Image (cartoon, rainbow, N blue to C red; front, side, top):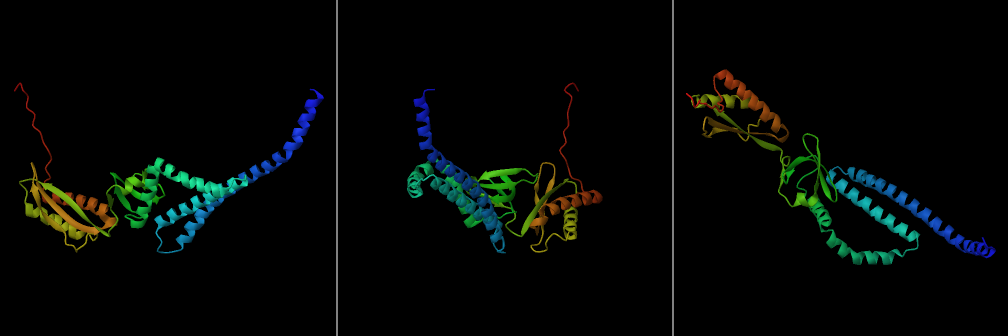
Length: 277
C-alpha cells in the first residue's frame, strides 16, 4: 500500500476517533437507559397496583387498568430519553408526533376504539373482576381488563381475549350482578298421571332444600300441554352462587320422588311398520 494512502488513513482515523468514542458512549448510554426504562416500567406498574390495592374499596379492574397506564407512561419517557441521548430535540419531536397523531389515529381507528371502549367500561363498570358474564355470545369469568382487551376464562378453563370495542358494543349479560337468581325447571309427566300429586312432590322437594328462599315464594303451575306430556314449571329463588347446585339437585330429587310415587316422565316413542305386512 502506498505511503500516501497510509498517511490518509491515519489522518482520517485521528479525526474520526473522537466521533466514534462520543457516539459509542451515547449508544451504550442509550441501551442502558432503554433496559433500565423497561425494567422500571414493569416495577412501576407493580408499585401502582400494590399502592391502589391498599385502598379497600378500590376495584381490582381499576387497579390493573391504572397500572397499565403507569407502565406505558414510563415507556414513553424512556423512549424520549433515548432520543435525547443522541442529541435529538425532543420538544420539536413531540410537536411533530402531535401533528402526525391525527393521521395515525385515523389509521388505527380500531385500536383507539378499543381504548375508548375500555375507558367506558371502567367508568360505567357493567362487570367486575371475578364475575361471570356473557358478551356477544361469549361467556366466561372476567379475569382482567386492559387498555385494549378484556380477558375471560370459560368454565372449562379456556382463555378468551375479547377486544374492548366488541364488549362495549354488545349487550352484556352479567350473571353475578345481583345476589339472588331464579331457578326455572320444567317437568313433563304423562297425561294419565295425577297432576296434583306431581305438584305436591315438587313442592315437598323444594321445601326440603334450605338453599331455596322462602321469599319470594316458589311458584309451581301447569305450563302447557305438550305432544306427549303435561308440562309443570317450577320457579324458585336462591343465592346466585347456589344457582347451578340447586338446579341440578332439585332435578335429581324430583325425578327420584316421581319414581317412588308412580309418576312417569314420558319419552318420545316411534312405531315402525313393515311395508310387506
